[in-house]
Amino acid sequence: MDGSPDSTSNPTIRYYFKSPDFKEDRESFDKWLLSIIDNTAICISDKVNVAYQNLDEGYRARSFEDSFISRNIEIIKKKLR
Image (cartoon, rainbow, N blue to C red; front, side, top):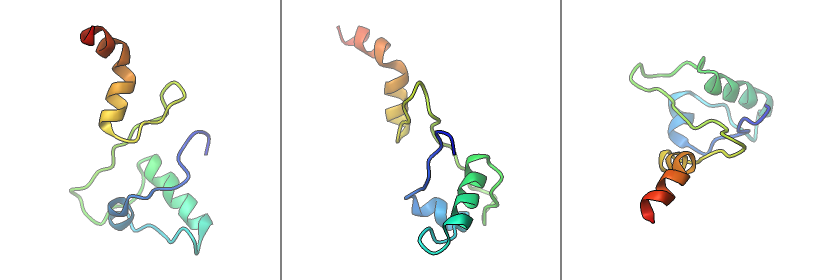
């Protein structure tokens, strides 16, 4: 999947987007995960949307804060001086 994640440990995403079991059917899980990544997965609620960090200059952040710091580290360093 070229730099894309190969799993998710997020139980909320797995619940609302009806994830197949990773251990029982890897092929179906991989197809499901690709549908999450390309935003074509069907959700059981029309009030849920998935947003996530992409690979950025070889680094994949794990949270909004991680992504924000990674992307703005030089500005942050200047402000702290």
